[in-house]
Image (cartoon, rainbow, N blue to C red; front, side, top):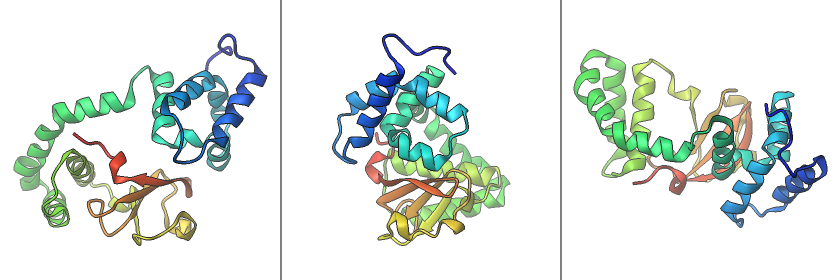
Length: 210
């Protein structure tokens, strides 16, 4: 938690910027403007988070904290690490080696990894690319550690809207709601935290690409 508001910020200016972000249309905003606003209001965001604000209240008051641009900006202020750049660099550096290990070594030692690999090969079909490899890595890592897929992914009909999701069936932990029969086939995802849909329009274009 930062000890002081950054200069020349005041409580009033923080509130003005907070309200300004809430007026931005969902799909029509300038990412650089949002990054600057998230950075300058970081003190107030941390204060509300550390004071125990609920996910529902945070999603209403700080909607960009649950979108890629705001989440990445907040993460960088918190850790000093560029989330997207660091993630993509590590995927590029270690992704192929990790997948090769699962396919050539781990699948022969752990039945759950072999089962997951066979299932993924069927679901993936002929699609290729970085985003498909990331999906494979996540699901194979879960199989390796014997984690249940339903703890991270919840599947709904392709045309489902946020208000139609039966949140009582969604895990309380952070969860991706997949609109479709598989992660590879879905074009739209939602993010749920504490059984609250906080982002209902994550498209496949937001997944890591080459």
